[in-house]
Amino acid sequence: MAILTFLGTRGEIKEKTENHFYHSSLLIQLSQPYPFRLLLDYGRIHAYDLSLLQPDALLITHAHPDHYLWTLQKADSAVPVYLTQETMEYGSFTPCNPQIFVPYQQFSVGPCQIMSYRVLHSIRCPAVGFKITLPDYQVLAYNPDLVDIIVKEHILPGVDYYIGDGSTVKTNLVRRKGEMLFGHTRISTQINWCKKYGIQNIIFTHLGQDTIAHENNFPELYPECVLAYDQMKITI
Ligand SMILES: [Zn+2]
Ligand SMILES: [Zn+2]
Image (tube, rainbow, N blue to C red; front, side, top):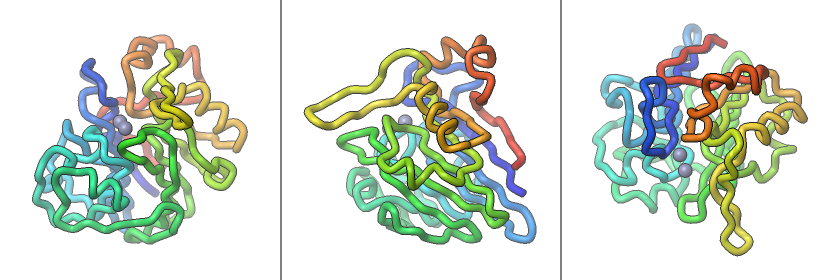
């Protein structure tokens, strides 16, 4: 059993609401027989200091400051911070206990099996998503910021919980520079990926202005998925 707590659900936007105040961050708490606290992303505007949260490990998707505090600020914490080499090099500061991973290589963090995968999102801050297998073999895919997953056919099969980028419902936020795409894909596109690969549980975090504007009629638009809000808890 695991408890997912969406500590923050706001993208890098000026707008904020009571339900979407803190930058996107997800805490996975595992209970007996494998107690462990795994934190995913930890940005500039966060609900709790790491000394209060006391995660056993922190995984970082990319170096944008709404996901990675050290891009702009120093933070002294002995928590192991798992990140790519390029994320560490982009930041103005470095975590005290960095753990470098290479995309597509599997690694263990406590009782969890992790595989990071490339997502298209930013040219300057290359991003990854995480496929996380819990000790009870439930599988999560976490990609809060993306235009696309590079090899969906290898990543999405077998996923039980898809936690995706809630930046936009209808507005096109995909940008192009030469051959490179960056920005955010729509919620509806991600739902179609999940349907194609038979993913039953679909949750969006990292809400943007467009999604917040549609929040009240969202359950009618997309009854098959959930918009997370700050402090939302799900037991899985
Ligand atoms: Zn972001
Ligand atoms: Zn980003």
